[in-house]
Length: 310
Image (cartoon, rainbow, N blue to C red; front, side, top):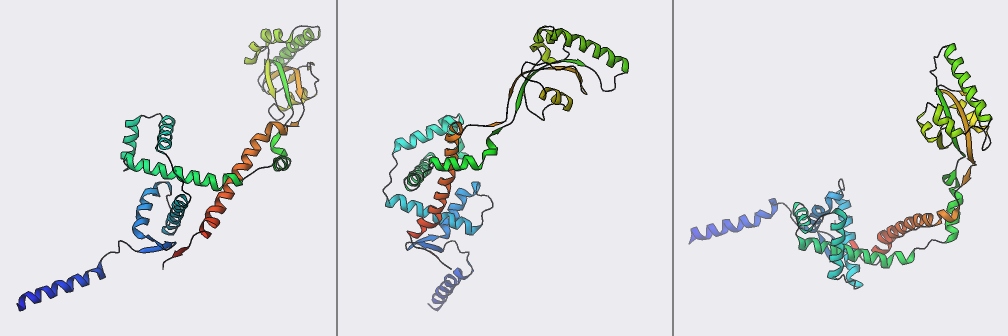
């Protein structure tokens, strides 16, 4: 009997001593409206979201968990319900966007340690949160025409269109270190072409016949060019032309050019009526984000009692 009592006593002492050296697997970290947020929940939450939140500290992860719990409470309090059909439609859109079928989706979920059931649960929660945010945020954000106008005026330089010229040319190639005789021969040929153009020869036809530039097959058409995109002597000669005029032969590091200005457009600004929709969307998205952050960090927390446990 004494021996049995001794053994029981030793076992009791061992059981009592065990918690002192054991690892803490759960404890209350915070409360939301009196309901506990535990270490076990935080560990599970961290494992679930850590892939997209690399580098987040434990305190940041706890704050995210509390926010997630607050959103869940708001969803419940406001009676937001997501139908199975909504979940099906969302998953179908994911499959279409990623060009995968049911089997490939299951394989992808398995690789992430998820089942289709847990995935549907996650989708339901995300849709619920989106509906909550739409209800609480989107209806309270508006961008007026006056705000669009002010933004346009303040960012006018972003919508400026520089001067540009529609140019054609005939090029006789000449290396920068060409001999005097080569330069004289090329200039004589260019002068001859220029005189024929002055006498009424068709520029495009002359370009196709004489130009040594790839654009020659297109009648010498260079398209629209802006200041700074051309060699300096070429740009200076082109800038001095009026629409329809042809320059005298111009020497550059590439060769000798005869330039024709087809059309010129002066510097201007894009019209507000063409930009208004894009500006409004930009301002709306920025206001939406600001409103969301304020609601999430201030208003949502004020409507609940959140206490941290030391």
